[in-house]
Image (cartoon, rainbow, N blue to C red; front, side, top):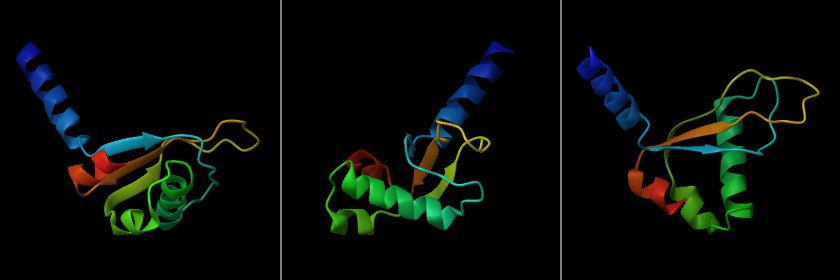
Length: 92
């Protein structure tokens, strides 16, 4: 039983190996993946100070918000970015 649980944890950690989680990026209720990705690219350029040409070359497998949207909340949902390349993830 413990071996199976450890294997499951390992598989889960490997599936998230190319992920980064970002906070404090404004969001809206029905934000599309394209809108999330665009906001993330803008955040990386403006807040993390990576050059625009580097950010333009980054490929994401998926970018999406975590959890439920709560209107009138001071908190924003976290944004999860799954990079195609671990190298791009490390650059960011």
